[in-house]
Length: 179
Image: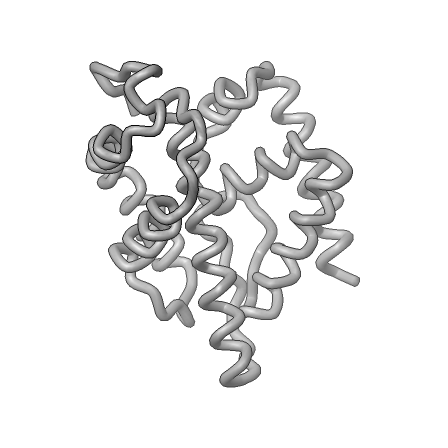
């Protein structure tokens, strides 16, 4: 997604500029959230609610130096991950569930239920300690729906490097989740 105008110094702590950036990226974030919702039959959050909850989380946190709309989408992916994990934890507290595998519409590890979603979150936290770039890539792809070319640009690596990282991270995550 290209935005005609984006001034990097425009966001230096300006909440109004962050609001404008959210408005510019809202539809794309909602599209990503809709794909998550379609893939998860047990989801209790609508796409609009997921995006809005993520926005509330972002707006309450200190403003980082947002460098581009792509960087904002990366932060939004992290916020959506946190919202989804929080919702899964609340559902797990109410009941144990099973279900069909959910793939979030991308080539990520399948998620059958809230317990597996929480396992992915834990595994991603562990991966971040060993290889922060791989963890950022998986989070951006799995929870944010970013394309590989966007993630490569964001992380400032080649797509070939990113694809190698993707294969390694997927294999490692699958091993962790299977434990």
